[in-house]
Image (cartoon, rainbow, N blue to C red; front, side):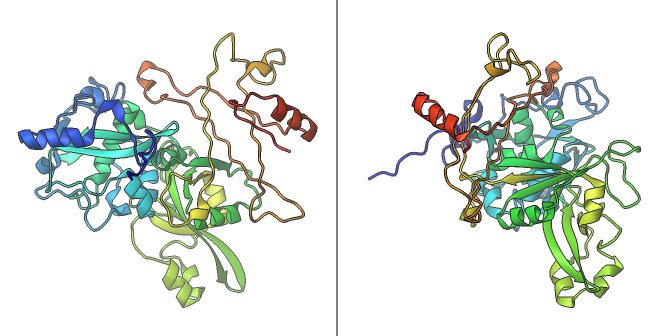
Amino acid sequence: MMAPVAAVGTHDNPKKYQNQDFDELRAKHLASKTLFEDDQFPAGAAALGYSSLGPNSKAAKGVEWKRPKEIHNDPHFIVGGATRGDVAQGALSDCWVLAGISSLTLEKDLLAQVVPQDQSFKKDYAGIFHFRMWQYGEWVDVVVDDHLPTKNKRLMFVQSADGSEFWSALLEKAYAKLNGSYEALNNGYPKEALEDFTGGISESYMLDHPPADLFQTIQNALKEDSLIGCYTKASPGGLEYINAHKLVALHAYSLTGAEEVDYKGKKVLLVRVMNPWGSTEWNAAWSDNAPEWNDVDPKVKEALLIKKDDGEFWMPFSDFTREFGGVEICNLTPDATTINEKSKWCTAVFSGSWVGGSTAGGNKDYFETFWTNPQYYVNLEKPDEDAPPDDPYCTIVVGLMQKNRRNKRKLGQYLLSIGFTLYKIPQEVCWIILYARDAARPSVCVP
């Protein structure tokens, strides 16, 4: 009996982006002994951008598109496994993307979902590569050729530390293709990339007034294999200004660890943070060379501290909440291949739209029309496993996405101001809704 074929759009059977079939295209070019040229995202001015990287911009002058074999005498896709050292930021302001990629390197199963490992510049090389990403409820397989933008014979954008590995540069190109251009990747939040690379759903915490249990929330999230991004606050020095403690203003980082450490008879809360630049680290309390480590149990110090200018560092949680603006936790869904099965959330995706004169009812200040906005009912039936019997609760995370807005930046269209409101429905009303609703309509009811 043949195994059932997974539905199109799942990770096991991703949708072919722009109807490009990687296996068919590679086989065709191997047979003809030619190298693939991507007519859907051709190497040239349009792929770079539309304004600051537009055809007439200073940044676009002198750009040459080269294949890895023209850049390095012995290029590799991946050597010895993909690591954070393979993700050094270039001239693009896409640290939010690189923070997401860096987080993937810490979870090899998740990385393999996005970056198929059986690709090479040696075996079956035809100038074509592919990557899997999650977009608005479905997985897509994105094909690219391996032309990469260079200046003065060096890659313009992301690159590996030694310049010989190209998986990260090609992944960045595939993500640029998915979003319309390289320039479309300028500026964003880590959670965007984390969701697109995992299919997960994010929750955000602003650090101007963080919840009292945020550190425990972060610890629990890390134990559940969630990926965490964070970003620093703005600075009078402007974008990418580096302050006296070597933190970069308005910059995306990954949060990779959270530990309680015994220090001089007290408990100190520490978080480990990673800069996608691969350098430029926090230099104050609990940094790599800070004296605090000398008063910590040697075994703890050995387990936690790695003295290396690799962009990763420890810092006190109190300093973290003061210096950083927000934390974003990406919770994994059943699509994610991880060892920790308990970390996966049950998910449901609903598509809708606001249509002028019909379903665009405005916010709740517009009493007469607010009710016409799209509504979805959610019925939470089972309490969390760790909820106390005398106070059962069920946790839900709700996210709202805007489709294709980065692709529309070249048209001057950016993110819209949108939102949603959650209401708890009284039990007596809940039963009426459940009884009266159409069977095909998604149900929602919070007792």
